[in-house]
Length: 172
Ligand code: S3P
Image (cartoon, rainbow, N blue to C red; front, side):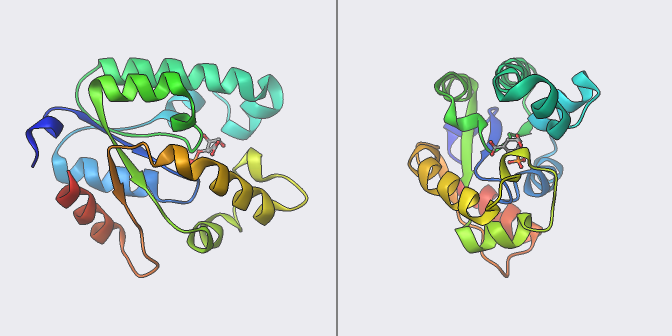
């Protein structure tokens, strides 16, 4: 392990469907630290789903809550923190993460992402007439920003959660 990553919160970033939550849980268990998820924290505090928050209060409201949650979780004890796909896009969030965390980009390709999100209805940003086109546009616009993460790990179609977790640990 590189000394710089010791004691830092591992922050998983990347697109919807990259596996941030699934890998985050397994990674936290392997590292023996708590698992936190920014979307889940926002949902619990609001007692609403992400889709309901977007519909009722709008994306701007959601993004403000997201930054609060990320700031709060990063100032607490070391953990593994999975973020929503848009979190790393905000410069303020990247600053907070750089101060106390190590960012890990789960860089899955577009086909793998689509295969994982296409049958789910939980992502308000994909509720458009052309969800694949929307996902592709987000993927293309966001990739250069995710690339600012400290570490990149690429999920492959055959990888299990355990394989991905091992890849992340090796990269830390
Ligand atoms: C979003 C991703 C979602 C959730 C919200 C917005 C995004 O999280 O935060 O729907 O902007 O990509 P997941 O990446 O966990 O799906």
